[in-house]
Image (cartoon, rainbow, N blue to C red):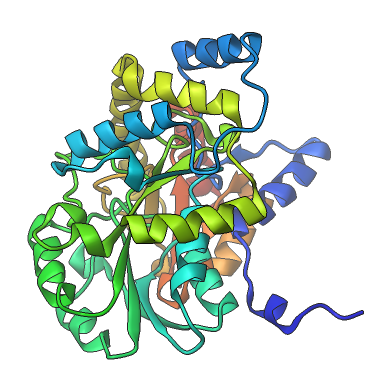
Length: 385
């Protein structure tokens, strides 16, 4: 029996592949500093953990509603309304196991073979993976260093056609940490407001922003009914292993996402949803401390990368990634990432794994301790001296 042809079109996340290789080196007794995985190294805040324990003790261990418990959807709606300056109710909210279903399910519900999807490149690799898997046409827009790793609006405008059915935005962005300036978000809204397309706005890093809050395109006139907001708990509350995300979208799309959800996952775990309520409605001081520490690490690590021979790295505006230009190092970014793992014991990601326009860059996650980040810089400086 052969695999279906569509399985040839689905991709993977290289971060998990590099993690496996790094663990194999550690099993041989090698020291490896992990800067490959995009995962906060902080513990989940204690009040969230306690809420989950209480939920287990109270018996929240059975099936829940496919769309999510009303109490959590109400908390999400209130949070999104307050942080984006819009008015949404719980009927627009879908609770799902992680953020990726809010990429996969809406694309599956909306795209036909041959439809075009405009998306950032370099970008989160699952965007392109899902576009190709569904038989749609990926239309990458380069994020260039000279534009602060944001869109060139003229290039974006030229990429939009009558076949464009979706535009993917991600700000703050993975892998670059770049932000789309508010004035550019407004210009993008003007470009797409009257087009027959949906915007998938990936805002999973919206709380990890170092200079103000990013502008959500959903908050602009006429855009709420054209936007799918993707957000979740993994990055903001250090809950990657809890597998809980959410989408906020027009009600007509909620029905389709619920159908796909019931056919694949039935529901999101009940006790984790109780923890999600505690996350959104409880104290936010640990989130603020985490972001402040990320800022400290960003400043020191990016400054350190600029002392490594052949490296150049600007300070990102959000998320917890440094996207270093390594064109001066004399190797392809893939060769250099492999070499740094083997020779320096620093696990990092080839920028080309995030798309063709990521070639010449390496992504480092600074979601590791300050001490390990400084040691990683020292190791790379010695190895490349």
